[in-house]
Length: 146
Image (cartoon, rainbow, N blue to C red; front, side, top):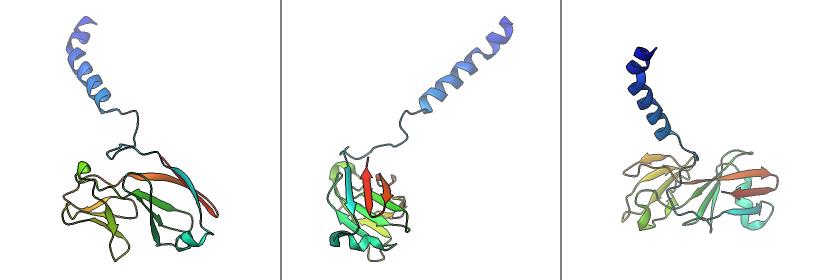
């Protein structure tokens, strides 16, 4: 038994070490400054009427650099922070391109592109997706929160 222990002691400790260093307590990696977000919007109000139709979006204040709320389907919304993840201290904002699906940051930042459907990077040099906020839909109220 002691021979078995001696033979596998170091591989066992290395495996445990790798396992613990790869584990995280929170799967939502926050790269931008944390800002509490917790609000409701009523889609029956004229200011939010655009969101009554899939593939439409609005830009509103909130989060780190503002929020993009995109209606993906009749029951799904995507809420992204406009803070570019290329160089976070530069505090660059992303804007919605004319195609309505691509998000871009300015030329003085990086000219990176993200997909509004999930915030994933379409074109670098940015490597990280945009920060996505949670939302829940109970018609006509959309609740947005961290």
